[in-house]
Length: 134
Image (cartoon, rainbow, N blue to C red):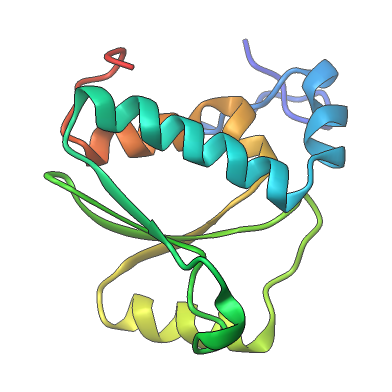
């Protein structure tokens, strides 16, 4: 049985990362997370249909737009990357709210999502790959 942080059972559908990886997630920077996302994107795109876009220099872009846009046969996802304790800015919250209202799949990925396999699973599904194909 997977245990939650308080020692009780984890809620259904929730992946709990092993305690040894909690420290890794807590110290991972957004730049490190971004490097891992780029690696997963490269690997998934090599075996499935997946494109990813990340603005090279966001200083000249509209403030708050999500870091990443991914497209594949499974749809379109927009994801903001944050550290374990990072918070969305007001502009990021505005974009997230409006994009969700428009029906977009928009969310936040954190280091624990990398370590749990959530990021790889979401990108593989978006690329039209079956579970376990990556």
